[in-house]
Length: 138
Image 1 (cartoon, rainbow, N blue to C red):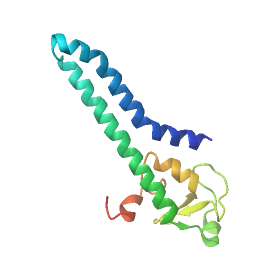
Image 2 (spheres, rainbow, N blue to C red):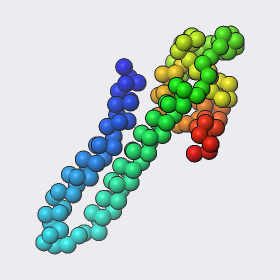
Image 3 (tube, rainbow, N blue to C red):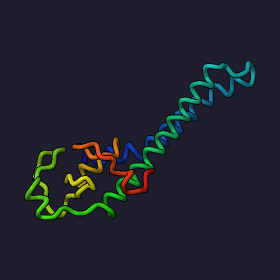
Image 4 (cartoon, helix red, strand yellow):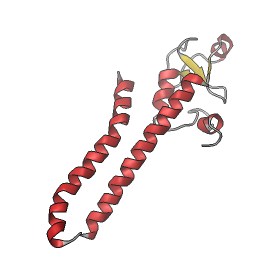
C-alpha cells in the first residue's frame, strides 16, 4: 500500500505545483494591473516553474526506469537466489517470480526497486548507473 501512495504522490506532484503557480498568480495579477510587477514575485514564479519542470522530469524518468525494469532486466535465476536470496530493502526472502537482476549482478524485489527508482537510478549496493547502461547514456 505504501508503494502505491508514493507512486500517486509522484504523479500528482506536477499538478500540485501547477495549481500553486495558478493560485500565486491570481491575486498578484489584480495588483499588477494597478501598481506594476514587484521583483520578488518574479523570483517566486521562477522557482515554481522550475519545481513543475523538475516534477515532470522526475515522473518521466521514473516511468522510463520502471519500464526498463519490467522489460529489459533479467529475472533472477535459481543460481542467483542460491547466492543471494535476501532483499536488502525489505529484508525478506526473494523468489523467482518477484525479483529482478540488475546489470551489475545484484538482485532485489521488483517492488523495492520501483520505490528506489523514484529517487535514484543506480544500484543501491554498488551505485552502478543502471539507467545509463539501458538507454545509451541518457
